[in-house]
Image 1 (spheres, rainbow, N blue to C red):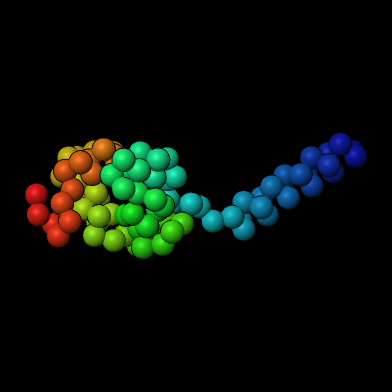
Image 2: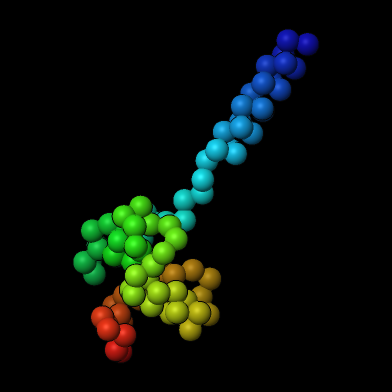
Length: 88
């Protein structure tokens, strides 16, 4: 019976912890891949240093490229084709 209560308590604590964590939308390995294109942090493509919602012109371009290329995910290597100001 004691073992069951401990198990239940751990499951409850885990569920509560899951409720209070927010998903991270930024993907830190992208920064490492984008460093060769000048990235220092997530603001290279996002509006905030921690990434997540909100993209600057470069980030919006990458999202459009994902659609154009019919890709499952953004690939930072596409930045080789990015031209500031939207010109290709």
